[in-house]
Length: 163
Image 1 (tube, rainbow, N blue to C red):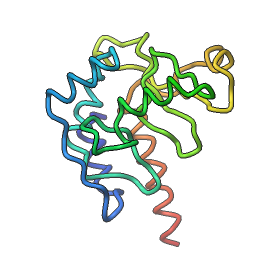
Image 2: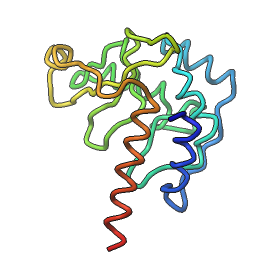
Image 3: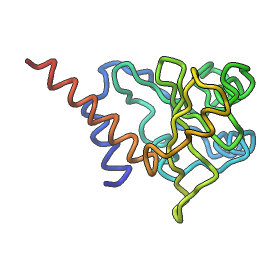
Image 4: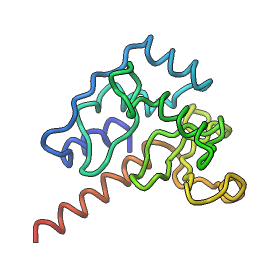
């Protein structure tokens, strides 16, 4: 399944009035990558380009852009999580999604695959930094797989609501 196919499915289950977020400019992407000292995975860049007008119920990802994004700005979110003494997110993890309970889904930039995609790992806000590091293991091989799973869960919830 390609990221483009997954984004088409995202449109199906998107809430009716999402926050419309413009695609970031190449300059904004480069600035965010420089501030975070990483390269975003190609699938996430396609997502940023094509999916700003779509979101699932009770779901948001961090975004690349200017200060008007507030807490949704991916650079702001990562700096916040790195500097929060209760979280202490390491620099090699880039959070792109907060699950709403304080936990983070992150790109593990230590392990890119041959296409430049990073595995997705879970950072538990209730565990110590050491416990998180000791338990760190990939949940998904890449962003596309994670997004596909999120859409599958939204589809299941939508099907349950139809009864």
